[in-house]
Length: 491
Image (cartoon, rainbow, N blue to C red; front, top):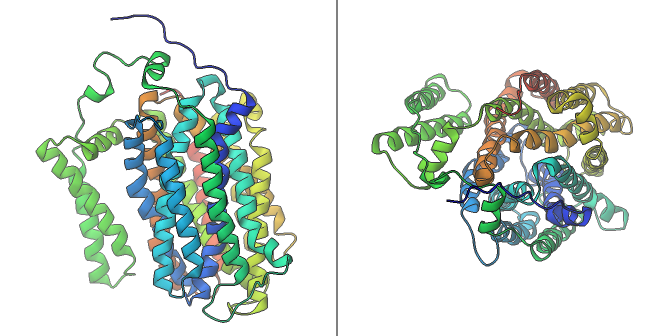
């Protein structure tokens, strides 16, 4: 058996980094359109504010199911078309179809179904792209690689968030009768469909992935390889099962919000799956994912807690900024009126602004991290995000609302960059896909919690004042910053 030292991956030129991440430009145009406009679409089709979180449940549920599976499969997909490319190209094509269908729905439930398709498709594209950057860059260039990707994420989100507003300024109607989606929104979604297909296609055609032999030379696997590593079967599945069943029983017995059934059912299913896998000593995809989940490196466990709190705050921002701004700044609740649609368009401007700040800030993060360290840099940026949420609670001037968006742009740049820089330093390259997929579970689980709990919180505590959701977001973002300071890299 050869004992030669592993080869170093070639240093990527800026053009190489550009091509590797350009597909994320199109993916984030689609996400920008979704984040800035889906609440608007749902409200236009008759949704109440306190139902918005539940209708957004497509994101966490599809991410929870799709990302670990796609990560696992993309680690093992070696075809003539590459390892990651088949997945993100397929996801881009399906997302394009969903972007065309979503704004043309005249029925709320059908729109929610298209959101499920859109979220699933974007997850199929996005997860392999994260691993793709790890595949194509050496450890000392990975921060730069993720910074370039974050730059494209920010730039794409600017375009996606602003598209309906710009189209409205060009003369496309931005209002419509009750129950109809404005043409500016529909045409913006059509542009998004074209953008994701073309941008992902560019990366697929311009970047040659390393072959299995080259990847093995860069990081030789230990004898037997990861495929032959004994599977781990966690013993705590029964406790997840008990917790899920208890929550479901409490919903029925105490007449709690029925949306909590989704959370309880998810916990019970996860626990039951762990129990069955352990009893049968099963093999296969689910057993491997479960084993990898149990064997997470310590740094990954610490970062998972950071992500958990961070993404609770993010999901609150994306769901509730539209009703907060339209009601608090534009004094409008009639979704067919000009004032409401002007406010919804301004939310697109706000989201574009924070993403523009993020696109620029991303390139400064590696320099700041060299001085402060990755964890401290991330904690500082998260505190800037917490301050942004606090300001959203008290500011009602449309122009001044850009101040918290600038602060949030700093946080967003770090959220998209620093956790992945810290994470990929601890992971075996052969498992970038599965571990990034598992890591993203700690993004979608908090989203699921917000989607099932937040509507009930609003109805119980501030039914006419959605702005108070921003205080909740500020507190959990501070918690995430504190948790970041506990992260120890390299473990």
